[in-house]
Image 1 (tube, helix red, strand yellow):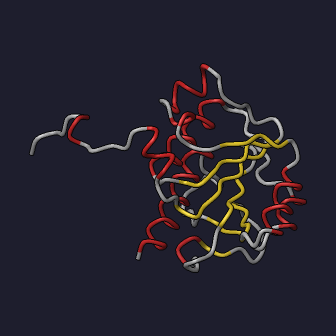
Image 2 (tube, rainbow, N blue to C red):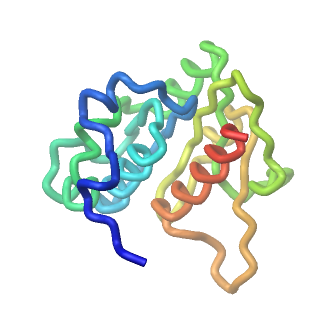
Image 3 (tube, rainbow, N blue to C red):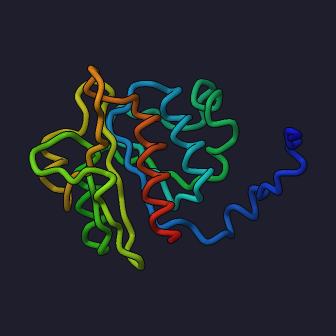
Length: 176
């Protein structure tokens, strides 16, 4: 086996990315404190051609040196928008027939492995603060909640790791 050079990876240019058909997923980041987490989410969204990221509450926005450190240019490819109030974003997306799902541990959540996205539907996924998670008010507005099954002693995953797991899972289910 030989490791491939970057030039062999056939990556899209920024213009090609902007023109490409997007995966019908929107990411909503609410009150994310870590700039590195924000940058990492941008990079994940670039990797899977995610339609858009909403940055809400205290979540920092590009341009930012610390976000760029982990985003590695993904802030130039992925469409993003800042909105102060996550509840307004959720309501607005729902009014546009987007299914909005919180990624959180709540009563009656659907385990990610049991979640089946419907083709021809657009999904928005809400990820909350590193300590407090998705707010109760936001959870109540969503169409439902998805929970990542966890078997260890910790009760949560890093926000950027959670985003990667959920986006990959839904992306691959939509492809098949």
